[in-house]
Amino acid sequence: MVVDVIKPNFFVLLLLLSGVVSAQTIDSLSQFKKKVLESVEVDILMSYYQQEGIHAAVSGGIGNEYLTNYAPTIVVRIPLNEDAVLTADVGISAYTSASSSNGNPFNQSGASASGYDDDDDDDDDDDDDDPSYGDGSSYGSPNGSPWVASTGASAKDELTTVNIAYKKASDDRNQYWGVNLGGSIEYDYSSVNFGASFAQLWNEKNTELSLKGQAYIDRWNPIIPTELHEYELFQETFLYNPESYFSGVSITDEQGNSVAGYLPENFTSYTAINRNSFAFSIGLSQILSPKLQGAIFADVVVQQGLLSNPLQRVYFQDRENFYIGNFQSIPQYTTDQNRDVFHLADDVERLPSQRLKTPLGARLNYYINEYLVLRSYARYYSDDWGIQSKTMQLELPIRFNLAWKFTPIYRYYDQTAADYFGPYNSHLSTQEFYTSDYDLSKFSSHQWGASLNYRAVFTQFKLLDFGLKSAQLRAQRYYRSDGLSSFIVSTSFKFVLD
Image (tube, rainbow, N blue to C red):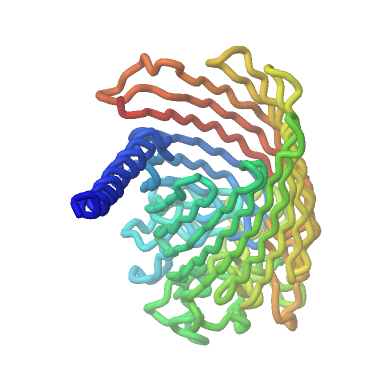
């Protein structure tokens, strides 16, 4: 009897002890599980971009494209536990643009003091010290040029972006999923975006499948060229209505004769101001050998809504040309010798309200030795607007030691023109869609540069309680066959909380 009583109690005790040991074992394993992110990280990023060109879209495919842009950004990554990371980034992109400034290119106010200023500022840009503009233009009359930057609010702007992302890994680090939410705003455009991602690793983490979906819900605040805005307000009376910018302003034809026949009747007001984009991406990467890694990926992007830019002018070859300013400069209109005459728009860019993009790409990285790695990238792109493009990029990271790495970079790009593209003054008024934006033209480009990376082994340099983990300096030059060129330099500093 005593033995019968002891046996069950013994087994109960054994089970309890095994439960304690199992729990302790699990706790012990969880303590040694490698974290997705060990500590709080802060990235401080800064870039400067400068551009020059001769095909400004705001002035119909001709004119000054000079632009500068400063873009500071701060990215903070916070480990919430062993498996999850929260990332937040805030950035400001501040630019000045000669092209955008010519939404209102006229450097004098019109006859009406209450005339519309497309820049939404209080400065009518009067210059009472200017001399006469010659025989072709009377003193004090408005003039402008696609080659001269105007002033006002649209000459510069700031794009502010905020994004938050959450990413979580499984215990075995074979699955990752994440969600993100963000938004941006500038003077004529705002955007909200959200998305989700998933990655699955298997084959001892030698194979990875990734999926990502992203949506952008955007909204225009349409800013249109001054002459079309006045026509929108006053219709056929806008040339002599006392409230109009153009009341009493001299408008000439190509021969310099004063005329009153300018009527941009192709222009219609915007009823839809939304733009929505939906993107889905799939990628597959594979370690092919101890020295070779490859990846293939594909995207499908669907866009809907107002896909054209309301500020970009278009000119028709089957319509008479009308100008404001010094008519003697008209023969030099398409060169930078023109400083004081502007061609009034026939309409703005019009594009379909649907667009389907399908990029396909691949990467191949080869480990040459402990000092050299060859990285290659290729992509083919097509859309239903008629554009097809090819991209090839090569990088050759050269590692000097554990701390320093230097990477030369070269990129080649080539694309066909969109079905709706035409140069300055080449479209017909009977067309349904038209644009003179050279981003949609046929061109090829070359980009080369290099980056210098530093990786701190012991985070000896400190900023408050943060140690420097890595730093990068990157510079690139870009040349396009249509005359556009640019230079960009960027820096990044990654700090980790000690």
